[in-house]
Image 1 (cartoon, rainbow, N blue to C red):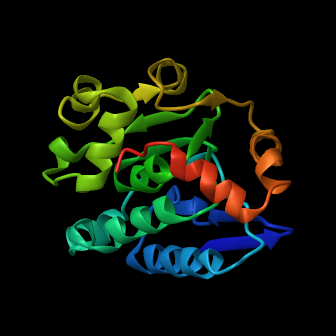
Image 2: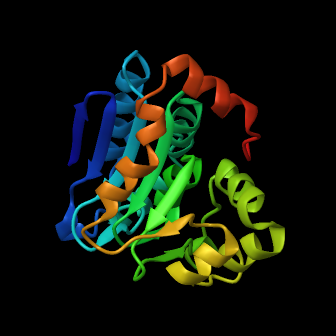
Length: 208
């Protein structure tokens, strides 16, 4: 349910459960963690892009598994921490709406691009769960505490154009052009050494 493709230093991880809005199971989270661990050891890696199949990036946790304990799994924090620690440029290419815990991997990326129809929301207040701690920190670093509260406490769904204006998304891209846009954004990194990419990335303060 996770498709991985790596070619000439450009890796793409695709959430491939479109019949369930790419909702994440424990198995999928583990697959993502393992895949990140593998590419972290690749000296040729310069860019990692995360995207989804179909019209939704991810609806968050699979509800049946969430009720059975997945919402409290340490895998969410492990995944976002591993993505944030990668030395390469990381890009979340949102092919549609992203919700709940799936937002953690998106916030952990260096850049976020999205189709104009995408929405971003994190209904933890409504569902009775706490957000992952690093998600709240990263979100606040990007858009400020008050706007983070609008999402996490007031349950607001943020349309992509508003997310762009707030700095939660960095560019809007028409459907069908996401991967081309990701490759364009990664072009300079693809032409640099990994040490150079890592060096520049290390100079830029992260949310966590």
